[in-house]
Image 1: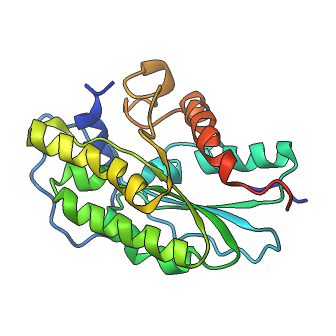
Image 2: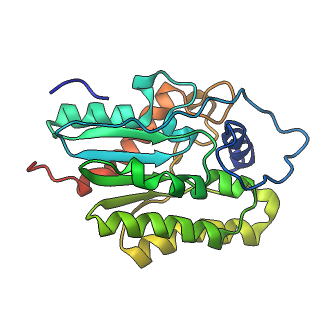
Length: 237
């Protein structure tokens, strides 16, 4: 087989995640706090097409999935690929992360991101919805549509949760957080409650921007993702 590929910091995280957008979403953003730092935007890359014979695990997400600031082999999807190889599981991982994507942007890319023999879809989206103060019910509809379309194709889904920035108020952040729990229950899909659990706010696990994981932080996330992902894989393939 060939080589293959908690919460004080959240306002800063979501600002930087959105700052990485290259304009792929048409929804206007709300004004950012004046003191908010920014980083140089990364050029969004299309999800790679795979013609591999192996079944696929697709990660659909934003800059946290794309691996902004990391070498290609240090992103979370790449680390999951390495884990699969080490476990002798015949899957190929597709990194369909695009910096700045909202749930609407992810939905617009869903069909061609699921090209091929996809067995599992990992959805890591919502951070930029929270930054822009987009209605949680709209985000829920977008994520629900992704889940529904994937399940119609017989694809297993792992949904990863995210937090909204706090400046929209407690009611907003609570409703935002609840979206992921409700979707997992209503659609009977696996849920990783918070994608950045154990990494958020930890200086030694993040890059200089303080919000995107460094290589060690990505390894922490990979271990948590693997814990939720492994039960969805068919080790008999």
